[in-house]
Length: 466
Image (cartoon, rainbow, N blue to C red; front, side, top):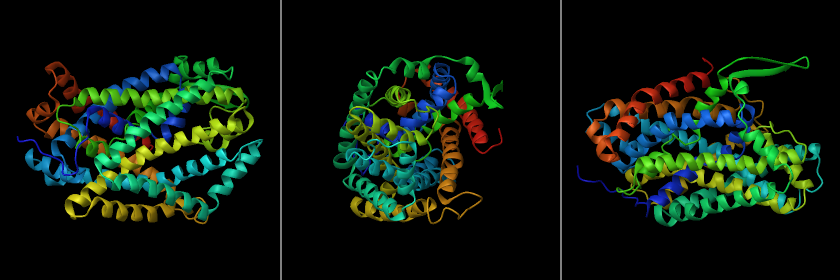
């Protein structure tokens, strides 16, 4: 088959693709969620299970999604339409592309609002707004922010403008330049924060929290009842590991597929996917190494979940020496992580409009940015004036989050695995991978049997059946 060329351009190197895909995968969740769930589910034991899940669930599906993208060289919708015709499958498989593009679009609409919180906290930290505040003071700051629709709208608008600016400039001038600077900057900021954490006197305690294996905690669910801890055998931490391994790599939302369509032909898909998975995990672990010593040094609660970022850490930054500087660095880090993910969420839809509606990238980015911004107002208002408006007993934000994370993404990943493992001819995928026979056989077995079964389990657990 003659090699297709993307009309949008191509990454200049394999390294740039890895930085872009890692930027898509590394987001707000890496900075708080992975360290938090690691500490709560067995520490080092959970990390071992998580890495196994990355290997058998995340990386095989990522390889499939990149492979489909590079073979189709178009937006996810047109790629699935073209490849389904080539492989003799139903044209309805284009719905996989539509689902991914829609999921990314919906996620960005509320992701932009949450990223706006981080922008607001950059300013707050830089101006010394956390200095000397206690728990009630930080809680008040947070409640004032989310309770003010006009302020939330302003920060949401700024973040969407930042995202539209990068995407409008194209693959080389926009996406490539952004990830070339954003990802190294993110790594440098993490290293600086770890350097500070090493001098808190609680670095060892933070490492113990993250890495000491506790297989009892991994295999048991414990809760305190009347002051007594009661534990029972449970597989829920393993399900948590499987679920996070799938979601952390940005699978099923079209981002990895469209980034794969810009990937150079000679670049190794398998090697790139493995490295992306390792970098994504490394960022999450290093974030934990930076965060938890600061948490322990200030006598704070490490199990605060999402509140750790916006309602707990500011207390630490307000009290510690150099807190204004390091607090600002931390929230800049959050903004960079969110920004690199956001540009990948809107890119599949922009690519489709350019291909199918003869739009320029600038016009496509502006139109999609405006529509995303308007939809994001639903999330803005769900924290204040619409907080009592419920859809299926969920706020607008909760509904979008549940629909995308629990239904659309796992179904998208499952269908990608089925198409590439069961409907695509072996010679087609083998040609694109150009792997050694043994490596290809391992991927073939995982994508046909193990990965789909694992995603089904994650899906059933997410919707409450398991």
